[in-house]
Image 1: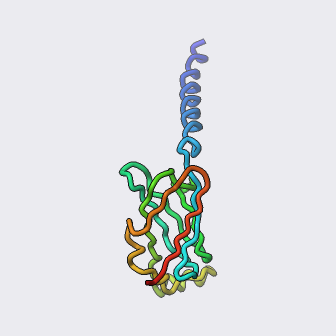
Image 2 (image 1 turned 180 degrees about the vertical axis):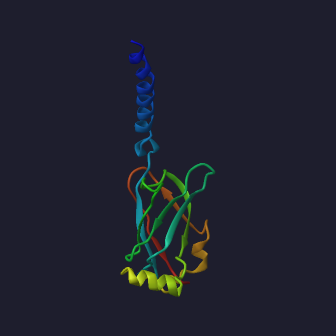
Image 3 (image 1 turned 120 degrees about the vertical axis):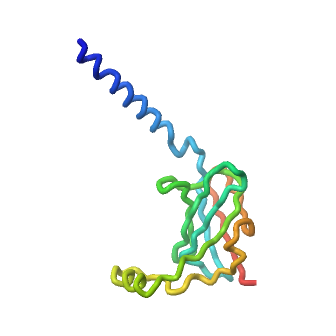
Length: 148
């Protein structure tokens, strides 16, 4: 009889932890999907880190990376897409220039390195110049930048 009681506590603890983990899903966070395009003078801007920093002190920064078409999708965590609804300051960061050895390594693996980062005007790289409001549900937020 004591053997039966010995396994009840571990089983109960595992059940409680499993219920807690199941309860902490993305739906509980009410994440909104956010995607869009970044263009400069009408041309797509690839390889740019798009950062949404909450204007309020509470909240988590969401990030996305533009593809060759200038498209991005925000990620809240590595495995959770989206952002919490609210107001954000947005900054755009071009990728660093690959060194000769990094370019050679990327080319050897069949990847095409960016030899020069996109020429983004410095003002777009500062938080607060670009802003966005994320609403519940799907959001498409495009940034149509100009050199002027």
